[in-house]
Image (cartoon, rainbow, N blue to C red):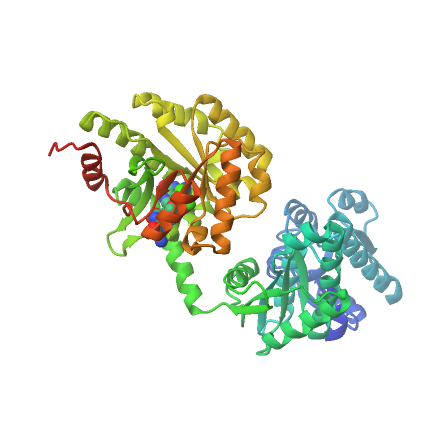
Length: 567
Ligand code: C2E
Ligand code: CA
Ligand code: CA
């Protein structure tokens, strides 16, 4: 790859000649400068400095052993001990045969004896050392992805950095290309067809980047990274690429999405530049046609905002800016709806930014592990709240808490929850756990094990956002759960005889057969309530009854329900 880049751009490999005698430097320079880009150092410390400055581009060091300050042996030792510099081969220049063994031990690649041989011999040795070192790099690691033959991510980033060094003035675009609903292609048409899609795409991408003098890799699964010189016609390129792939595949249903970070900022690392392109890629709405999205200042602002939330979480916890709200759930099986439990939902009251919705920070904290700390806070608050209500009103309001995917991998999860229940004197069945459906889809066997353990302890487990993922229905029979919470999107769209209503009825029916109760959330209207009641839904949560409210306000709901008036 780099070789091609060099040939096309007429770039010579860089060689450093280190010798304290001017005449020796001149002779070597004369011999090799026609084929190589030569830089010089007069002593070991100057050499070390140059090597560090040029560590990415330097192909070879030719090193005299006898020098003032740092001598050749010492320099060899330093280079050999340094992970980043060890890859640069060193040819030792010496007049003493006896120096050979010691130099070899210190990692030298080859020797050239003084007085110098014929220029041909020297050139051949230089070329061979460089070749060997480069082959070595290639052998040592898998540079290309087995399936597609494109670079692997690690090598891609390395080559991008090298590319930047060689073309410091070139303005580049970082692009992330992704197949829409690739998991469906795999599932509906088989993995081998999925692989054909990926290899075909890789072929087309390879052609394109070759033409445009760029680089590409397969990052993971169906995500490709592309680094090419900047242009303004990315939408056009996307169309051409989509067409090319459709034609080669002989299958027109494929659609792609492209995230572009144009004129990528060189002062940040390439990985970060691709993070930005990735962000743009994930921002896309349309999942049917091919589409693209540019990383822009708006996104940048959001990134900074997210960065701020991440940095401020700890302080906000300490300073009690997080508050737990409670939203009632009503059992609607009987004639009158009865308050049956509540869901604990977190709120962030930021002194400068105002109230921040969990929809904003929860997904963010789920990507970096902060969610665990926050969830533990909510769990503790919720357990204490059940106790407080019981002490105040003499009734038990069961509360459900949200358990993130990441919490499920926490080895202390079980003991932590058990401890909360015990220390607050709760009945275990009154402390409910909501686990989102998508948590199961990713690593179902591990999840099922954890859920089974928790249920064996006596916890009731609800599957949250049921129907939001896919393959939900066939998973249902295999899953150990007590209740499912229909995803709000279904509820939003139900009306007499509508497709979503039929789906909801069917899910309620299947749940009934499996002995799992059904909770509908996001119920806002009388009509939704009536339809769900008629379909046999057990429990309802939504603005129709109440929004999530602070515990003080929830007190009123309890008083009303149980006809208590204590305050
Ligand atoms: P979720 O668990 O599905 O919670 C239900 C969300 O629906 C809540 O949003 C609730 O306020 C909202 N909602 C309830 N009834 C209605 C309605 O009738 N109409 C509409 N439009 N919305 C309704 P919220 O509180 O903003 O929470 C959003 C999501 O954030 C939650 O979705 C949950 O995934 C997450 N979340 C909230 N608190 C926590 C927490 O303590 N831990 C974790 N891990 N996640 C939390
Ligand atoms: Ca929930
Ligand atoms: Ca939900």
